[in-house]
Length: 277
Image 1 (spheres, one colour):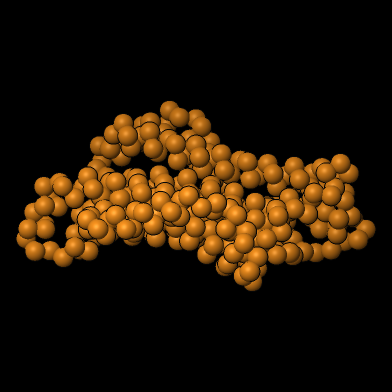
Image 2: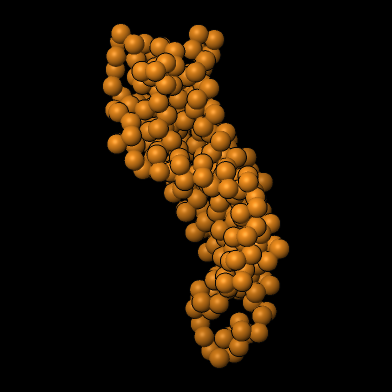
């Protein structure tokens, strides 16, 4: 990205309050998650004398059925959900970029076979497959990350493949090919750097998608295992107390909503900004 494009994007960012608000919220949630041991107490500390206390000065988010401070649980839950979102995004982005760029650059029968495989995977009910896979694998953060990462790369692969088909006909790529440079060197040095805006936008949106998927899996009891907190598992625990202790569902649900909206607003802003530049 050249300096002129960067300045145009920054100027547009300063005039987009939703993108600013989304970025600030993402930074706030990420910083709070990183500093969780210092800004929150032990999320698993039990206090039988403070069970289901409504939000108050001592417990701003109230307590749960075991007397655990719900603010601390939400902070550590955000740590888990954001970790799953970012690591799943990195995995799915790496797979999608690798497969899409190779398919687009090689073309021919290789491209046809890879794209038909991608089409077949896209036609499958992804979330149902995630639930089945997670039910047969040992529960935990690592497996949730792997399942989401390996099942969400297909759309990015199609986008990257389309960009590669265009970029490989550019003069500098043709010259590199004629001069005898190896295929993968051309992809790494000349094609991927020129599609970074597209990759960044897709990765931003994929984080929100991964957080929603983790939350849904945990909500159905197939994701993060208690006592480890995640926003989805907290919603799962709150199901039976919606009328007696509504804050157990309101706070994690609100945090999921704000996080996903923030990533979507930032991703949408970046997409429009790069298109205009």
